[in-house]
Image (cartoon, rainbow, N blue to C red; front, side, top):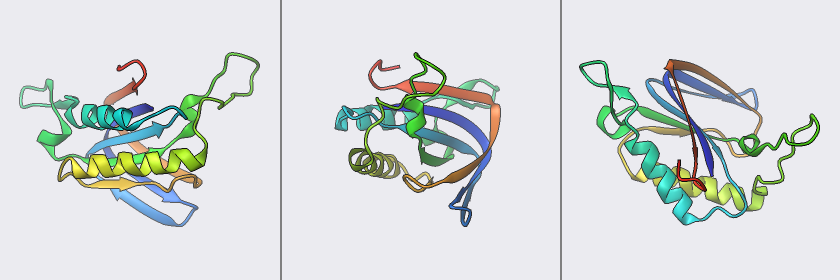
Amino acid sequence: MRAVIQRVRRAGITIHGEEQKEMAFGVVVLLGIEQDDQEEDIEWLAGKIMRLRIFDDNDGKMNLSLLQTGGEIMIVSQFTLHASTKKGNRPSWIRAADPGFAEPMYDRFVLKVASSSENRVITGKFGAMMEVEIINDGPVTIFMDTKRKE
């Protein structure tokens, strides 16, 4: 699994040009799933995101986590995180999981995040055309890959 985590002041998502969801302060997680991802990838990544100390404490230092701040979480599936641009100019997504595997993994990841705290979690719709609006705070943007554990 790969994830881009962005600390946000606010964010919104429009699904198929109709359904709209908004959130306040917290993080947006763009999540890419590979065919060989497993339950331990979900466990590791969900835990790491919830404990990631990227919010300012009273001294202005990034020392607080989502669990400590109560920040909201938006999770959006994004197979393009597995783009390979090694050859040519058209990206290949050969490492991205097929939808039949990826969608249940995405759902389990969302459930894991939601069940690990009382933080509000909103999602996009797997496989849908979406418009994501992000007001990045900082900006703070972090990339994680469960295969590298970083």
